[in-house]
Image (cartoon, rainbow, N blue to C red; front, side, top):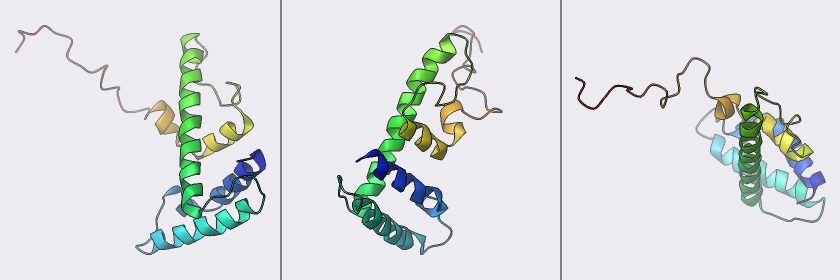
Length: 130
């Protein structure tokens, strides 16, 4: 897909919480598939990549996962140098990846502030302690 196609897709997804999985009622799943088909028609009209609504849904999910993976990889290096939690722009991510990161809940990247890391809470004592 072209950058224009990605941006049109992201514009459409940004306007509708149901497309991000926030279903309001039992009939939402059917409506969501219709919405993806409508988005497919709009995005396909731009040329280059042609997909069904379901394929664009999968492409969006894959794009979001690739962006998260790149963010985490670059943020790990950034944090290792004492830089703190960076924004996608600070990490030099592409404009499309930076934009899709707006759809990723921060807790998926940084965890919950009030929840301890389970690996940090492991028992530190010896094997024979009761």
